[in-house]
Length: 430
Ligand SMILES: [Zn+2]
Ligand SMILES: [Zn+2]
Image (cartoon, rainbow, N blue to C red):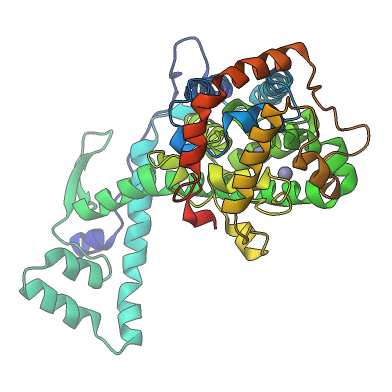
């Protein structure tokens, strides 16, 4: 009897496990390599989705900028953007390949064991409950007996310190001897499985997101505070006053490596994610960044409503008047709010002014400098020798203008509609 009682107070044993290498998700492509490919594929797939919407002007009512602005205000050609994005993706993939070289083989087969380890931790926490109740002057055994009388056996067991006399299992040793040993209860196993399969991965993603946001905020802000950094690196991204989806990673290669690749890499490495998790993490981060530059404030895009950091929010940072605000990217606005760098002024009139100026410029032939050029010098946006302005006389650009002028009449309704209730900028950014 004494032996049996001692046994029941013991912790349930942990199951044995056998490790086997984790098979790759796609045959022939190791998971850590797929984690490098997917973000690039997602970048262009999602970008093309927005590009089609842009080119065919499918949702004029949700545009942040008019097509006239797209043509007149940006200081980089589409080709410049594609070239630099591809370069950044090549650098990012090479960095990932170097990292992948040092990756250790991932194994499966330990999941049940790890869930049981969490179940044990839950049991340990219960061991402390009687002491906790005692602090409040309650007698654990009395409370447990009360619960038990009312049919709440599990609650009684938990309050008693994780004591479940009825929860047993029989195990057969290698010598063929059957022994009755304690077992975890169903609720302990369910909670342990939830922690292992959902809670910990969610924590890892949250950590990764926080690392990326923090890394990007401080480096991005430093790029705007330090003239040398701005002139040599970050000014390139700001050649896009009217961002569009595939311009999201239009950066100087050094900035692309520092801000995006290293930031996401540190987020991944410090979170303990598996390669499969990293596929989601890298791909999701990439899609969010593309979405932030899509040039639309869509009511049906969940990414734009999950947090207040969205395309409308980041678009303000791309304007000459908002460039010293809204540094936070890509997930939350926490750091902007903490350091009071959030844009707080009005935006409606400013957006309208830009639209009207772009229309006027187009109708006049697009020869004079626009306000972005004039205003940007104080933001280091167009320093000497760094402007690299796309010539308005560049043949492709001139053709586009001719095409656009022919279509100007059809743009007018969209321009008018943008002057409506919120002209595409959700109130959350105001
Ligand atoms: Zn910036
Ligand atoms: Zn941007």
